[in-house]
Length: 232
Image (cartoon, rainbow, N blue to C red; front, top):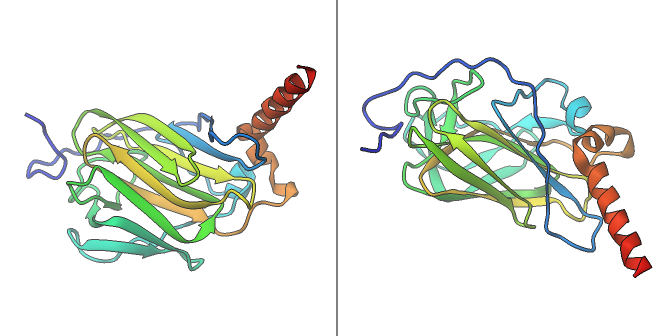
């Protein structure tokens, strides 16, 4: 029998120690363009407080709904005025009441309607960074995939028993900003701890954080490919 988090029986969240951020870089499938959105994934990833130093971006929390558990939610508003719209509409739940487990010590609102296996988050204005945690409803491993409108994709195997994982998308080019993200899985899931960029694409002075995460590697590979092409 498949056991779900939103069933009557609740399972207490397992305590996890803080894990160091292990960066996994996935690149967009775009070809001849300098635009770059990178995807980062890490189980139980710590946020840190100085996101400019860590990531090159000033990130702000998307304001969670104050509505009761079970309320249908169509959108949320970030402090910088960006609206995050859910399609289809989703429901508010709270860890551990309404959604039994999570990770990284988090107890707070998450969003799931207990049915949907694909959820699109659309932003009222293009943004340069967005991250969140996600966890499947079954107390078991499921693949969860997040894809931006421009095609940057990250798939992770996520444990539904207190194993919520981090998904992050970051752009270093104003011509390839994030307009929407679609999250999907074979089973229902919840997302939470959403943040987005409070400022435009980082200035060159702020890019070292991004370079450390893989954009330098991305550009190097593109340069090498161009050189090989010119030799042919």
